Amino acid sequence: MGTGQTVAVYGAYGHTGRFVVAQLRERGFVPVLSGRDAGKLAALASASSGLDARPAAVGDPASLDRALAGAAAVINCAGPFATTAAPVIEAALRAGIPYVDVAAEIEANLDTFTHFTDRARAAGAVIVPAMAFYGGLGDLLVTAAMGDWTAADEAHVAYGLNSWHPTPGTRVAGAVSRQRRDGRRVRYANGRLEYVHDAMPALTWPFPDPMGPRDVLGEFTMADVVTVPSHLAVPEVRTYMTVEAARDLTAPDTPAPTAADEHGRSAQTFLVDAVVRRGGAERRAVARGRDIYAVTAPLAVEAVDRILTGRTRTAGVASAGEIFDAADFLRALSPHLSVDLRP
Image (cartoon, rainbow, N blue to C red; front, side):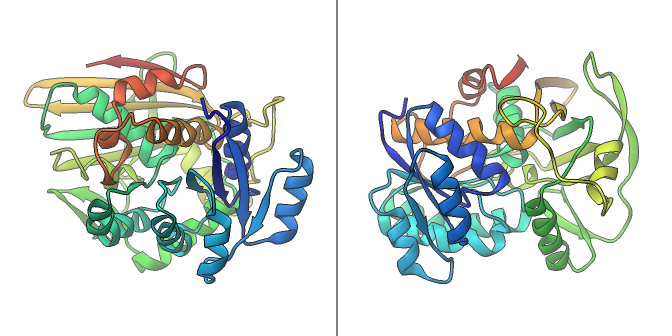
């Protein structure tokens, strides 16, 4: 448990940030609220029993330093991460504290590995990008499914979402990624990221019961193509998305998620099916749960708790599957997540 340690949350008033703040408090941490909008921070602090609010702008390093002062760690929930990740990481390095973010942006996560790996390793710092539903959960599932394998031919992560009501932050991050790709889409094949112009393939994925086979878009590429290859020898990493969820995401009039229970979670449900193959052998790990934004909070907070209590396997910039015991981490997420590990 947090035992009263303070954890700064950058982007605390955002949709995912609010779930993270609530989860930190539930785990015994004291959140420090931070972000760019002073008014929203003040309102959240007032509604949260007077938590400390510290406005900070990514273009103002001194304000970021004030926001992180005295904190044991920082969780960055503010997208687009192409804009926020590097400045908040720099502030975390200056403060000498661990950094965790919930970035789903492929290029932003790649930037973190590219620009901070050497510095973080030299400093003995811990930086964990994509500690979220996309990127972190898939990496944990693939790593757990691998078991004692040190390499595999292919890794597949199929996302069975019954719907996807994107937040404003998701839409902005998607627009930034599309701009960076110049109209192309991305996939991970032949041991590298490839940018292509062709259409995503349509196929049927055999999800486990009770979902069963569903139509999906293949090469619907998510942050797993950065996190998984960062530490596993897998030359082909492919991700898939149910057609109905992809349709929701791309439709401009799909509304943002709305609360459907006392915890603020939406009615969205998901099943994530991770399959690894080597030769003729196949291994699988499956996770089931509700609300992709809400479940990101226990993922990020569990990561912080493990970092601060020394339950890590490496330092530097590392994905979830590399720095944590993947199977143990996934089991610790109950009751937020139901996991079936069958390596």
